[in-house]
Amino acid sequence: MNSTHRPLIIGILLVIAVLVGYMVLRPKQEVATESVSTEAQTDVIIEPLQASTTPSTETTTNSFTAAEVATHNSASDCWIVVDGDVYDVTEYVADGTHPGGAEILQGCGVSDQNLFANRPRNEGSHSAEAYAALAQYNIGSLKQ
Image 1 (cartoon, one colour):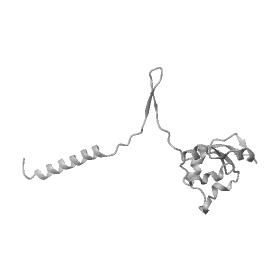
Image 2: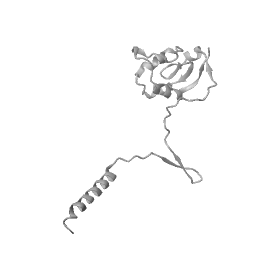
Image 3: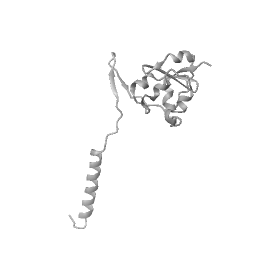
Image 4: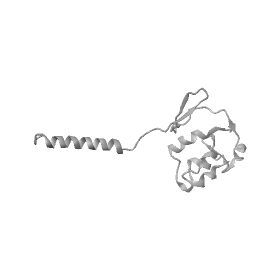
C-alpha cells in the first residue's frame, strides 16, 4: 500500500464504520401491526387507528332536551353540551386524561353551553385541539 493513499483509505473505512454504527444503533420506527388468522386460514392485518384532528362532518339525527341531558350528570354517565351539540364524554372522564382533572365533571348534565368556551379559573377557551378531540364523542344535538 502506498503511503500517500493510507489517509484516504483510513478515512473511507472510518466513514463506513460510522454509517454501519448509525444503522445498527438508530431507533426503529415501525408501525405495530397484529396478525389475526380467520377460519379460512387467511391473515388479516389490523393496524392501529390514527387520531383525527379534523372535526366530524357527519350530521347527527339524535336530539335531546335539556332535561334528558341533565340525567347524565355523574362521572360514570357524563354528557356535556357545546355549541348546541350533545357529547357523551363518559369514556373520556373514565380514562382520566382530562388536563383539567375533575373540573370536567362541572359540565356533566349541564346544558350551559358557555362552560366549554369559558373554562373554570378564568383560563379562557379550550384549544382547537380540544374542540377537534371532542368531535368523536358527539351523540346528537340539543333541542331548543
